[in-house]
Length: 114
Length: 109
Image (cartoon, rainbow over all chains, first blue to last red; front, side, top):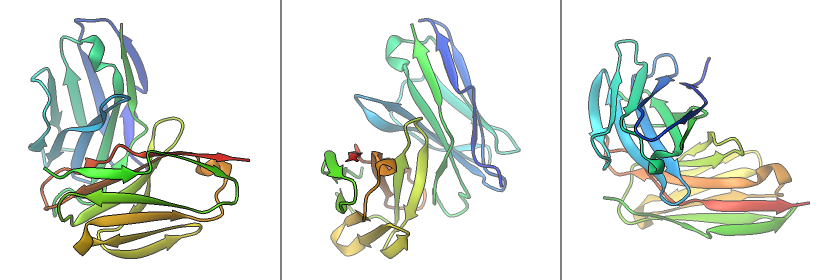
């Protein structure tokens, strides 16, 4: 079956702009988690959605937001981009019915902010 | 929250050598996974192993939950094993997985 799909794979933005990233989970998975990966900070948890509800949230400013749709697809948005937002954004899906569970990651969206 | 420590941070091996990567947790976990990050950035699942031992080809993993650590064994390493290996853990049903900083493995022919 198809894996986790993230779009776009690469994108370049300038400071002050906003960006929306999309994640389609594995069929049947109801939980979607987002992580930010940077060389300095490693993999940091952004948020998790389960059945359209945010179940967990990491320690990121309010410029970072997300949502999940009824088909379990998820989007995350970053507004007023800063240079430090340049990172690989990874989405993972899991069944989620008994907590986070086993995660399966997509290929990531690599964001460069100029 | 949980702290995850991985060791060693870097490892260079000759092709054919064996290696052991370690992951220590500051608290008990009931959700533990090992991943390999490929050169394009994707995290590939290796093992979901909250306890016990599993094997998949040349790779195996052991988690001793009571002592809060997990080990990943790579035998007869190949150049394609190069990359960064991450472990991640969580300690209750609804908390996110916390990742370690990874072990960067370089296998030289």
